[in-house]
Image (cartoon, rainbow, N blue to C red; front, top):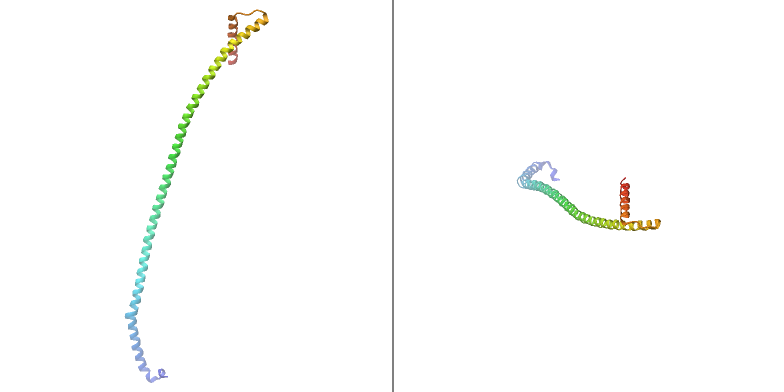
Amino acid sequence: MPQLDPAVFSSQLVWLTISFVILYLVMARVVLPRIGDVIEARQDRIAHDLDAAASLKTEAETALAEYEKSLAAAHSEARDVLVQAAERRASDAAARSTKLDARIAKRVRTAEARIAAAKQDALDNLAGVAGEIARAATEKLIGAAPGGAAVTAALARATIELATNEKD
């Protein structure tokens, strides 16, 4: 094998050195700068993407804070509307209750007046009927009819006596 011949070692070492220097220069001047540029561009893109992600995160947090703020405002507004509606309903109910109470009170007064009038009529009729019954009973018992004034006086005394007994 000619590669292992010691007589050609020196020429092989020269060509090895020349090949290594050329390969080194090509790598150092052409390939490595391109690889470095690609790596640097990639790092720049990653840094830009991280900055964009951070700014988007900040925007998202701001949007979330605004959303929560508007949601809280909407809840507060809805609560206020419900409170106002409840107050309106309560005032409407109170007004209707007042009107109803007034109508009922009016009906009660009217009914009481009718009852009082009916009671007075009954009492007036009762006095007349009691007088007639007392006169008829007295006439049957003793055979003589008492005078109208005596019967009226006796009924008045009995009425007063009943009134005082009822108070006790």
